[in-house]
Image (cartoon, rainbow, N blue to C red; front, top):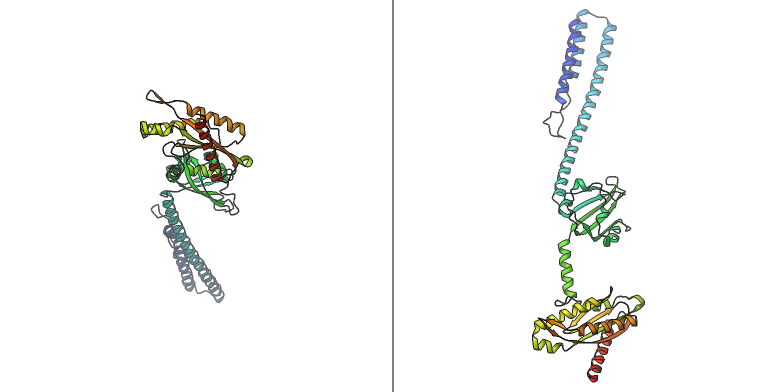
Length: 381
């Protein structure tokens, strides 16, 4: 009986220690890797204990009541062990599935991190206070901002003041999602053009912020602006060309009326033929500079072609138009220096005032007025 009582205690203690060693994770194990299965040694020890108990009782010849109690203990023990083994088996299956899910989640996180690390577009997430709570590594390449240092900074402070309205409209739509081209300040003080898509995900518990995905289009925008400038400006003088002037004449004007001055240079053909085209180009660029110096904000000077220019006057008040006409005649009549030699050209100016939206009529009327002025000057001479 002493041996029957001692051996089970040793078996249970040994089997429990063995189970702990089998299920323990080692430092070299991969995170999320498979776990050690549960050990059956403690249950085998219990079974051995029951067998030893029955064997010990057989040696002392117990009565029927003791055998009945022993049989009940053995049956209850078998039932408990069976239920316990089934529970451990289910737990082992659940832990295995959990480990597999954690491993897949880790792999997906590494895959996503690799994509974001090498993505050319920048992703920014801001909270309700417009403070950055996440910045992708591309923020360093595009805006010069270290992703860690960007946390907590106010994104709106980097938006160009002119583009603030466009930036606010990114998430103000009915769908909470919109796109716009805005300028954000680089750490070196310059502004970068970004094509930004904003999505309001503050209601998403996994995000709780506004997500901005932005692509750097600075070079494309610069090329676009350069091409548009070339298409709407005179290559020699830098003034607006006829196309841009016509576009401006079609825009609604304050008060509904605008004035156009058409200017034709007197004596330019003789200078161009007598001194060469390079001198003629010098005269034209000088005239363009003098016209530009006389303009007010909102006015526009254009070269229509050859030695013919035009000025769109934003304020069509007669006094302003008359004053500007006199200033143009005086400025273009002043001598133009050519290597110490003065060259003189005159100017004939025609004025037309009318409603915006009909550029051809305004230019035609101003051109006719200019030729009447030129004719009167020749007749008076």
